Length: 199
Image (cartoon, rainbow, N blue to C red; front, side, top):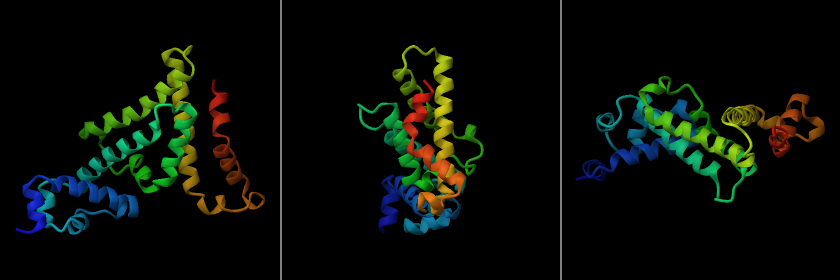
């Protein structure tokens, strides 16, 4: 019996497929992924992988769940992490794990309602930020805290998305940067001030 069949019969192939897909997306982006490629990486037949995942979307949905779990752990940081630390962690994850971050906020899995696990982990991600806002300013009511959390999340997501499209320009000396790029860099470098100004 070969290793692939052994993995399958012992119930480990599903984990192997997911980990292989996660690593592939991390290195190559989600658009390049196919079930056939992942099957080849796991040294199993296409038939074997279809027993676990009906379509590419179903596999990507599980990669999204795994990605959000990793994202949430990274953003949460250590037990002493405050809201500024967590915001910094957010940007670090986005820049250091660009392809995974792109997948988390992509349209690759269109119908989230088909995959309730995604909704659960995505909600947990926002709850982490919301609780940090409440902890930072205990005088806020729920609506005010939620509004501030949305402002912060929108800022972080915007800066992350824009920065990834400006990698080359951001590497230029400040004097040579186009004004919009310089503004983005200034916003990144003054993250703490942006958050403080909201309170």
